[in-house]
Image (cartoon, rainbow, N blue to C red):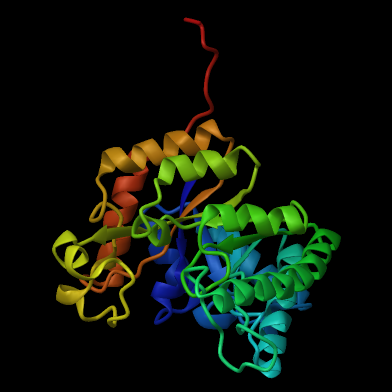
Length: 321
């Protein structure tokens, strides 16, 4: 298991500048964005896909700074009711899968997407309760759309030998572990989770229980190290479904926080231990989205916590057992 970083928070630096900085602060791996909501500042598909020279240059940079690519990221909505937006997202995901194969990367991270609530609607519709009955009907329709799309995409990923890590996220069809398993069971084992606890904390989901649930099915393909703090004084008054902008920090029920500022070092050590119990030995990829501090400070403090939490050796023989 190693400490990684999703480099989106360093988009103001060139890829070499970002790699040099991450090497300096003790990072082992990178997650590179190549389209969708996360942009493509460090890995534009138009420059790297099918271009052996550009890919060789990237490999040389990685080697120079002692880094590996843990995953490619292209968060988007391939189920969007606007056909042009859905087609663009689909092209980005398929391109990311092809690029991952060419770079020898085994995982692409994305969202499940979210359809409209019925044929002909123009806006994605996040269903959070089964009544009145039209909402249950809408949810069933959305799953029909999702299974049709993701069955084909899962087969495409399998053809290229790449896993797809779905980030469980609000305003997406898959936003919690049972939905994640439902999509996996309806498609194939290439579909699994990009386990990002920051979206689960405020839902009241126990993180280590969720890791065990998904880990028992070998369904964790990638892990985002990202913290969240629930501010109970606000949540007690209005609950946790909070539509205030993330920059209205004092009034929100919860905020994304740097590692260690939502949950302490003991919690992250428990997460690392539970991940090892279920056989995950990949990257803990820090995604910085803490509006109370700068990206460098948030990353450096997060790396500091995780460096003490990760195991750097393989388990020895249990001589005492």
